[in-house]
Image: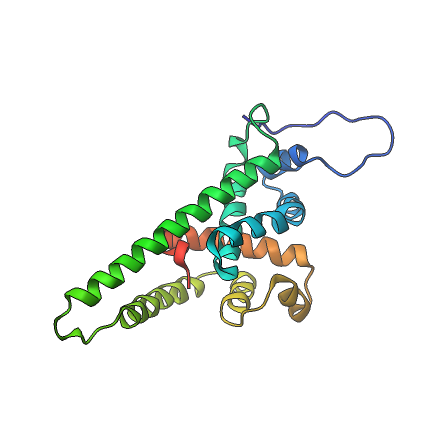
Length: 201
């Protein structure tokens, strides 16, 4: 298991921190180290999640879940078992497959509701609309409880469809700040909404 603590200093000019070093710093709750890990590995992990889910938006949500997991569980990484990059890939694959299975369950529920309702007046799209409206209401209520700076980045992402780079440009913030605020806000929403956060919008 990973433990926090000082790392040995090598002679000469220091190079970029290793993934393991960054993960130790995440264990010490240093958000800038999480942002650095995100920058290094997000493109590969996003491509993997997108390939499994065939959905950009869902892949982006999985990516956020993965780095929330890293923030909360950095100490679970075992260097004897895998590299940090492999560990992140395994987490991403697991989360994406879980989401894919959940999607199929929801689709079956919608089909069953359509078949069981008398008169055929309800469609799966209609049932989905109700679910989506209720979920949005719950998410909005929880968003209103967030600190203003965290609420801002999530609203721009979810309701305006902006990427994190676009949010940074519009808000005049460093990209790392946007990523950190997003991760911390998602952590709070995850705690409040639990299972709902996995199908956020």
